[in-house]
Length: 628
Image (tube, rainbow, N blue to C red; front, side, top):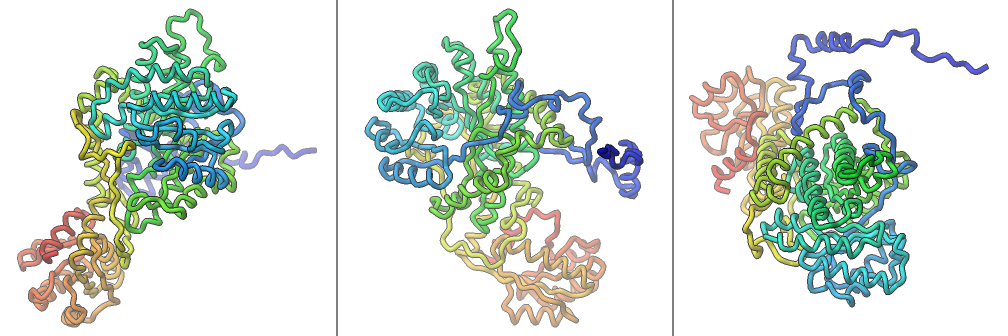
């Protein structure tokens, strides 16, 4: 007879209040809200723990995979996604050879970025030669002014080859608003081409035309709720324009595709994709049922409400220094996208911030997806995060905040009008500026750049790469009747400072460690990390018996900066004698913000490094004092 006894039934489950009482005891009087409740950048609070009762009013846990509103994914029995790699086409024959090569290395989705001069039938014939289009997901993109011509050529190619239209999965991307955001150009006259392309490709059930590139917002530093809210408004703008032009609502919705970025916020990104499908499905439902009496709510009638998402790992948090850390960032981002249930995914090579991707970096990027797909089996289980109290809460909270933003943009007259007014650009640029400020103060960490830099690394000629438009125009060449997004990477300010130091003169910073062992070691490590962010050579030490011994050792090492590292109490004893003995022969810095700081300042000491410093501005100031 099977033993049906359930484990732990003899133990009473603690209540939420009992948990809170225990936490209050452990905090020893500290404020629970300040110490444990996380106020997110997305505008809502995250509690330190969640229980089943926290989800009692949520509907998302009751949803099923493959059923409206698709919060748990568009598929019922698997979580497969296309492994995609993008190719910039300058030579169709070379691009074709590369495409055929990577198709044998795990890629099953190709993204072709085609310049306007190659939007020709001959170029497309060469580009697709030998590619079995019925089993590969194809994505074509060119400037909006040539998208209609490209669609006609692609349609003619498929027709000429006699492919089964029901099997062809492809996208001819048309997104003029993105160019308004990134280049400030007025491409509104091109919006009329959208309905024409949609009608041209309506006989292809798996074709996508109208594309929403919120990865652009992500790479400009947007917070998750901003990307999500603007994605809804952006998509709704195109959907409304198509319907107003006479395109059937179901066809219009079916041909929509969203290109979203993925940041390093692991669980929040999983929730973002879940919330995106939920909200988009409800928006599309209104179009599909509007004016139809007794319209069915059955999932089978709402297939067009499925949100098709291509995820691309972010470039905003990529770094030039310690660039292999980019692999760690993009790997967790890829995991978020996979668990979030995307249609296809691009992992950005780790070196794109400073050079054209190499064969090695592209191979690693492909393998990052293949690792989680073929070895970790992320493609087998649909929405494994479902039922997680934490992720369900994040999904609901993100959905609520994003919906508020969506409604705000609708009140402004829609996404296009908000872009013309500069509302979207101002919002994202303000976030970008804030994040750069937070990075400068180490409120936002970039491992290897503003926190724990590689002390001995040199740039070796690596320089940040400036982005260019797919038609070859740079930002300086473009007309700018509208405001545009600022897309400076988060690490750029520190990289510029470090490269400048390296090219001018690398100063030596010497740690004069003395007194309390634990405090001097901790402060020496902090100061080394602090100063190495600017590329300074740092020399740590085990400790000195007297300040004179330490200063002499620093001068022998030809130090430009002497950092005294001790405890707060001992600075009153050691700092002023060390400063006087050094006698201006090098810059003198105190590691910390001791209670006797004012006394030290009165004695002439003016440099302090501590956790409340603006690291970037402090290092710029030191460079200036050192004549660098």
